[in-house]
Image (cartoon, rainbow, N blue to C red; front, side, top):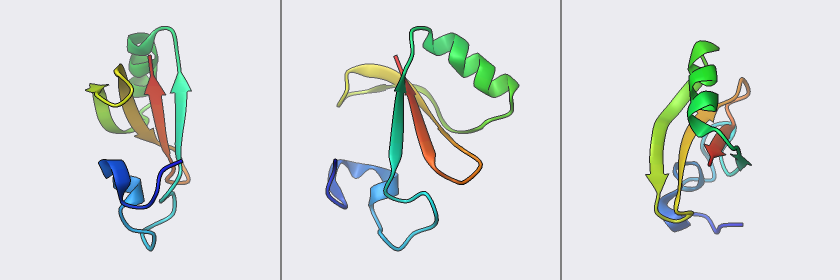
Length: 75
């Protein structure tokens, strides 16, 4: 869990923001590139393409679900 405003998570900077603010779901997968390509093929709302997260020391990408919640897919 994170306190509001810590670690520069965009969803946790303002508690009065839109739906989906304050909750981030992480999913760990074995083949990040394949999952990323599948998400693109499904026209998922990709917020951030594959990048290195210095906190988790893993590559990941971020998308939003149909309700506006952030999903982080990580290796």
